[in-house]
Amino acid sequence: MDLTALTGDLPVSVGYVNYQPCLADLGALRAFCEAIEELGYAGVQCQDHLAYPWDPDAYHYAAGGRVAHHPGQPVMEAMTFLAVAAGCSRSLALETSVIVLPQRHPLELAKQAAALDRLSGGRLLLGVGPGWLRAEMAALGWDPRTRGQRMDEALGILEQAFDEPRVSAEGEHFRFDAVSLEPRPTRPATDLLWIGGGEAGGFDAAVRRLGRHGSGWLVNPRLPFERIPEGLELARQEASTHGRGDVDFGVDLILHTDDDLARLPAAVDRRRQAGATRLTVMLGGLEPAGSVDELIRRAHQVADALRVA
Image (tube, rainbow, N blue to C red; front, side, top):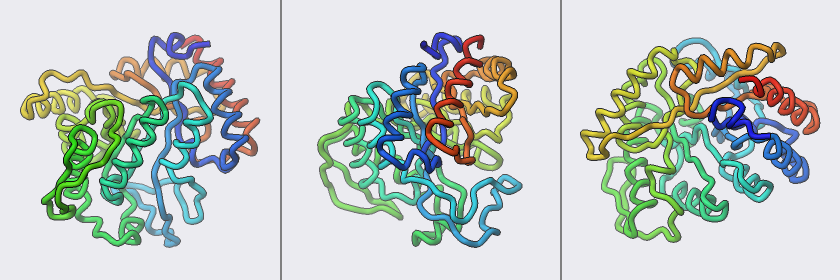
């Protein structure tokens, strides 16, 4: 079975996999990866949180409202999880959506990413974004108000680390003399890097970063589909300004599932018309499955519903 053909050549990955406690076991993770690979899913996708604050008021989302994350939320570290998933699969893409780039040192992340990309045979998709959980950022020892500046500096360092033998920085937040990070990934930075975000006041910043650095856009699920063409046009203008030419950006859109799977084909069509080039399906999101068998059954049910998409 090949879901990319069944959904009109849109690869379909499974999201939030590192939020499933049942996959915090090597045998279960291997069984899950083998099952979804056999079903034709294209990849597994992780989100990135390192520390959840106990203060419940920390979870008010900047764009308005609250999110489903909560104190005590179990989540496995994204890069570690993907490294193990690489060994449990043959062809699954290993995706982050997104690594909170400002709260990771770009040299350390570059080293992790290069190793993962090399050892997996070039399967890494490194999605990065500025993050939203300010209390988490503060707990890690930096000012959340600087996250945009930190992200821009870090993106420049990642590009150097992936593409150049000498890496140096003279920014406000990252500063070091020339160093080497070998081996480098199998592909250039612009193939590896996808940019996340774009909701509310972060729209212009996200799409301009996409134009300067990325090959694809991990669209925030709160962004109306109607704004995607505008964002892509701004990204193309930014790419041209920075000498990247006419870039054909990928677009990843989230596909939520619920008990009424009969509505999935229509949801796929809406995303295809909105410009999606790939999809990320949520088999339960932040809700933990009772067992890996339950999670695999859900993957089968979604695959059956997508056959007609």
